[in-house]
Image (cartoon, rainbow, N blue to C red; front, side, top):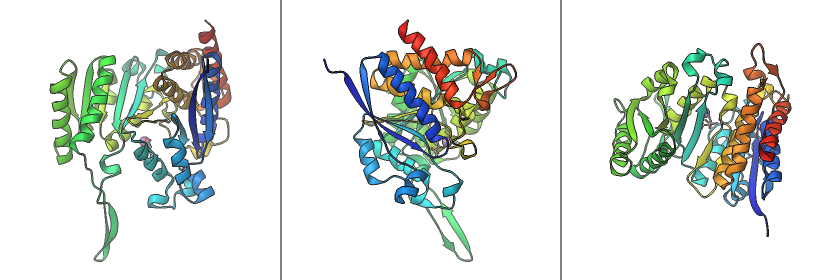
Length: 364
Ligand code: IPM
Ligand code: MN
């Protein structure tokens, strides 16, 4: 019988993107070698790397590879080298274009604080221990993409504007993703908006409530203003199960939530909704430590765990998560997380430790 084959496009990108992508691929290879599937990789440039090579942060040929793949793994994009660029020439705009083209409208960002990490948090360990939440961020709409947008002269000064816009179908479909996930978790959704000020949030709130009442009345739903949500995430993060929110609020709140576990270097993400899933660590390109074997590979490795889940390789996904927990429990910490009493390890050492835990799991 032919083995199942998955075609994966790798977009390492910029800064630490290549460092963490390399380790995520090592983990994928190990998972494949113990399971019944084969992985084909196709590495392509994106972001600053693609600007340097082809003067375009997402060349058409690269996008075509992505839309034809089974999954896409992205490292990170951007850096000071390209900070002078504007508009469609920025590295980030390549990523936004990719999300849009893949139809990846729901961005899943799980945040959990296992016991082994509670003491790495900038907050009190007892305030964060046991946090286990999922941010469902709308990813292909809102103010990131809204028109009109522009910057233009106005009399003796300039003006600039963006538009935060959502349609009923855009809100409806992401709300359904959030309620579906809540059904597999603790059956509670918090929808975050700014409905006391923004008209677009009033529509958001109405549509989420409508979807709930019609099809998900078995799930608890509360609405929360985004300023309060930012505070509640710090005060009592355990109250949250699934948080669903728009593109900009989700961007901000997920970074805040990521620090609960002590580092943005832990947070994976999956962007789904289209035919092809896009998997990427939430962290950025951290140019100051790029290429030094210092970056935390956990976010990228957990992202391929999510990829394996979406490909239907649940056992392999479980092995990845197990390996990460084993390594953390054993006290291995990259620089971003290292406190007294821990073993400081490099990117590649962290990855090897995770792979050891995976191997034990897959053999057992
Ligand atoms: C993220 C990043 C991106 C975003 C940037 C790099 C465009 O911050 O994935 O959270 O704002 O969505
Ligand atoms: Mn962000």
